[in-house]
Image (tube, rainbow, N blue to C red; front, side, top):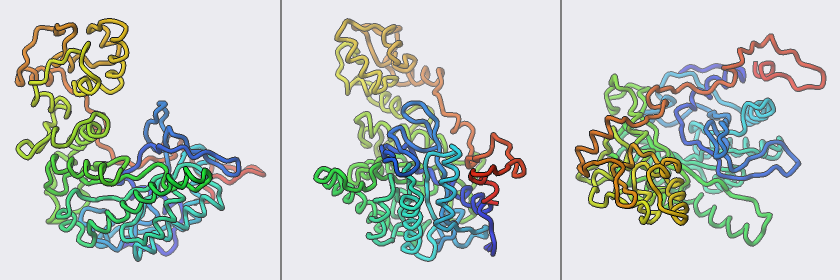
Length: 451
């Protein structure tokens, strides 16, 4: 282990922002914390993260670890205790200063704060609490904050942090208890699920308090999420989806994130390194299936089964389901109900709503469907308009699959071109420290006080 006696904030930021890049459990905020006029920052429903908001804006947050020190030796983690890596830790004031100064310069709109487990879960959670408390009270920051709860920390500490954060997340780490025991023997499923239940119960109680007392403080208003590593252990897609579905139903999570396993350590218990790299296409299909669970009314047992436990990575999960259930097709778009339309490949929940509304005014044809956003290159095999298909076609699995594959399925560029580079706040500026001159009455540039 490399230990540095004296380290600048810039060096710490470089280490701890890079160490945070493997944590994908951050998303748009889903909250509407408003500025009350006494501080700085604002959090709107559009969301705060390096993502796209509901109104199309690309928004970002400062994503760092409080420390990459860790007492655990999880075999898949770059920060595990047995790894010889350079260690660093922030102080609460350093995190507050970084957040405020980056916010003032319009680089970020919020903070995503995670951490390794330093000394003990309670010690780490206390440091996170002190950081958020200072940021909210002394620095008057009222923007979005997403913080990781530390499994094993006391319920009192998690509750106190919950009243300061917008969203909390507790990483499930691996889909099954057996996988966790194999790759993270110092952790256990009970310690992970306990704070999840605590946050869930706290949110339910807080909603009642807000109804009774309008000015009551809000507890984790943007909900909680979790993350699973995919591909480090041998679970199939059916097992993973069932775990996700159970988490949504039992813990009312906002999101389950799927993180493709990245080879950062050599260990006999980990999968062998291959030229294929992380299973990003599998991760992509799981996200698509997750969307079907949350918004399209599907259940895990409909999408997959023990006999057919994995998705065909060449086509999206809805097409995969449709090809296995050709007996329900074709669907007549002028008569089918909303939920039946949702199950048609190429028809999303927005276009399904448009169809239901538009057909009250008249009979729809394929030209109308295209204008409503229906992806006809997929939908044409599964729908009719006034009893007619768009082209003469056969309702046969092999025939439709061959045609779908010939058209090609769009895969996001993030899947085609893997990149795990952490966002640099100065990549497009080419700033150099000597370029900054502090004007009287103005705050010092970031380089001056973090150098």
